[in-house]
Length: 577
Image 1 (tube, rainbow, N blue to C red):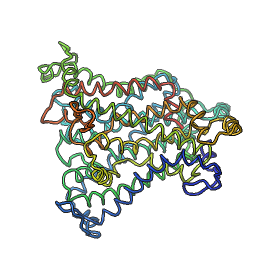
Image 2: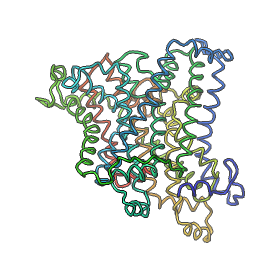
Image 3: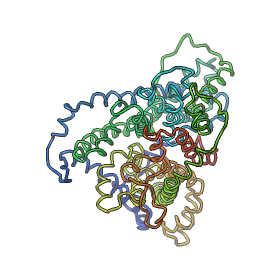
Image 4: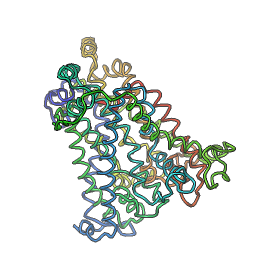
């Protein structure tokens, strides 16, 4: 259905609909489009330009030609960084998809009642996900003391586990939605041919959902390529360069030495090329109906597996999902003395709320910033993406090319924008203010919410639009008076996405801020470090307040879990296709 919708749109200009008579459509589309073009195309081109320059300590820009690219062969850390990047980008996605297939199949057999608890990991901020795993895998203070004492902090495979934990629910839901959408007549034909159970799954179901399997794999690759938060948390435990991938190495070079800004831009150019390739594959898969043929497995039994086996698979998936969350909650209730006890206690002997009191008293400025910025960005994002999505869906504004551009941006992580954006923010003199985050956060949220609203408005009844125009309304008034008030369902889903992305963001606050919000002078909006930065700072070996870290992590999970409950009925629609 999507493919027909995607390719049957009448060809138009690059971003401007040829033959559009009602110019009010531009009032709908141009605000979001102008923002996206200014804050995405310019930074991408700027990176390519800056890659031929270097900076002096005074901030002067000096032409060096291809010297930055030549330095790639001399960089003493690049081989380690590339190795880690390949592990995160290839190995982790492969394991994720291999695990997702049987879980999705079991969900289909036992019903989708377990979708919500299995999806929690994808809603929790990446920073919180990282700290809960590092606390649980601590060889002296964590549950791994009783299982396998190993220095997990210095292992890249801890980062792999965290990435699998966070990306697995998305892969499961994408594949599960594909299995659920297999046409009934194909199911009946398979049963008529005597194919049931394992043989039917391998011979019929898997080929039919191969586009979803490949989509899940590519999405996991995109996530792995730009993995950041777990590496940032883990580096404080393992030391520099041990866990680095290209994304984190770029940030480190950008953050530590102004003279490396040109080399940073060079690395970003390389990452942009890689992400563009993955985005192109993703766009192709989204509109694909290609079915991969899988050789018949002759020894596969043609009978249903016992339902108990499916419940065991779901149980193991639930344990994998919920165990680190449970451990985080346990640690948050321990006293300082009990936190340092060896062997570690599984259940606190004397539960205390002191860690929560400490976090609320010291982390309030960060919480206010996170809630404020997330709320403001959600409002801006919903307004921009609703207008653009309506113009694209209802009036075919921009045609195929604009739709592809939006899809490309949804698959392009925001790390590639930090060097040019930092220059822009410094030029406007809003470094370390709320305005720096308000300006930049929509880059993370507008593309994905535009895609959500486009899919919502594509089903908008044309009769309503035609009746409104017959009453003399232009397209802009149709949106304001009719479409917008009737869009609560789509906007609710888009708002949840926007808030979650904003709430858990770490990269932009690290790059563009350096102090907490000044509560004594609230109208200045100066100081803009977020709660994710606060949580990450607590994990530093300098502070090493693990009880407070756990309490802060629990607090950071409250908004995502509330929102997950709020949209639980639409969960399959959100992640599926």
